[in-house]
Image (cartoon, rainbow, N blue to C red; front, side):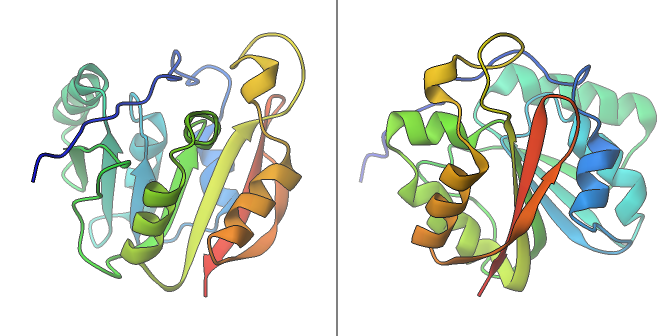
Length: 192
């Protein structure tokens, strides 16, 4: 069976300068020894910050469809001597190459709006649900829906209510919304 690679057409530049990963990880309650999936990790700035939080007992799976971003992350991992991050080239619109119920928490930062705009939400969200442990956290970080830079165009941005509706439709339980900086909010949800 031929698997069609979709790619993510709405990827933009890194939000490293405008989104504090420690704020995001704190809001989702990431702890020592946990397993985190960074879905659509880009250059991995959230994964890198998570590395110290989960410690040697924890693990981070950093997934992205864009090889140059993963290469940048791999270079940083090597430079810093980090051994708990696994960069994985993956198209989430096809599959996530992780075992069922293998992840405590998943973060998806500035990616969901692209899947929503492309109409490719179903498979990535069902795959995230599959790899999350029962009760596991799925945190979606998106740009606040306002006009102007930074971030994607206004027409593809999502409100927290849009995100909650999408997550509810895909069987997640909503935990609430938190501001995680000047430009971003986080919607926390849980696998039922």
